[in-house]
Image (cartoon, rainbow, N blue to C red):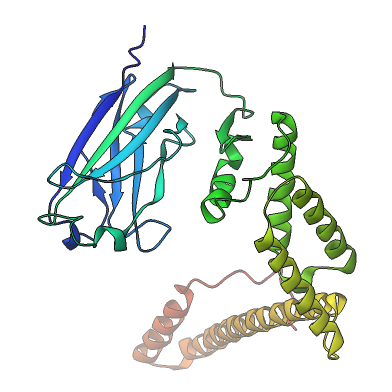
Length: 333
C-alpha cells in the first residue's frame, strides 16, 4: 500500500539577493517518484514576486498514463526559523500531476518588497520548505484524451488546463461568486468563457455587427452566472469603439478591410512573380550566351589558333558547370 505520509523537504538559498536566474533544488522522493522545487528570485510570469513551482523529476521515465494527486504547501523561512510566508490561506491545495502537467506552483508566492522589509531576510539567506502529501498514485493507465483536471473547482480537459490556469492567475476573483454548483454546468460555462475570450482576442477590424451583438449577449449570460468579467467587458467596449471609429470617419468597414488585405496579398504575389521573371530572364540570357560561344568556337576551330580555342572551351565549361534550373517547361513573359 502506498505510503501517504507527508514529506517535508527543506533547502537553503544563500546570497539570495545576488541571484537572478532560476534556482533548482536537489531531488527528493515522495509518492513513488522524485520531485524538485524551482525558485525564481525575480518572478516567473509575474514581476516583483518570488515564484515557486513543484515539479516531478524525469517524468518521461514514468509509465504512460501516470498520475499523482498531492496536497501541497510551501513555507518561506529566515535563518531564525521565523515563518515569512506560506502559500495557502484556506488549507493546502490538492493538485494533479501528470505527463501533460508535471508541475504546479505559485507565480505570486511572495512580493519581493515584503522580503526586503526589515527583519524579514537575515544574512541574505532564504529557507524554502515544501510539504508534499501524495494521496493518489496511478503508475499506468489508458490515455483517452478526455481526462480532466480540477482547476479552482472546475473540471477541465488536459488541453484546456493551461488557458484556465492563466485566467485564474490574471483574474483570481473571476469565479468567486459563481452560482451553479453542478460540475457539468460549471464545465459548460467555463468552455463558454474560454470561447468568448478567444473571440475577443481577434483584431477589432475582423468583427462584424452580429458578432459583437452575440458576444455582448454571451458576456451578459456569463455575468449572470456569477463570473466577474469587468475586464472582458472593457475589452468588448474597446472593440466596439474602434469599430465605430473605423466606420464613422470615412475609413474602411470590415468588408473594406478584407478587400484591402486581399489587395495587399495580390501585391506581394506580383512582387514575387516579378522576381521570378527576372531570375528566369537571367537564366535564358546566360543560356543564349553559351549558345553564342558554341557558335564562335565552331568557327574558331576552322580558322583560329589553339590558344583561342582553349580559351573559348574553358569559358563554355565554366558556364556549363553552373547549376541553372531547367526552364524548358516554363513560360517566361
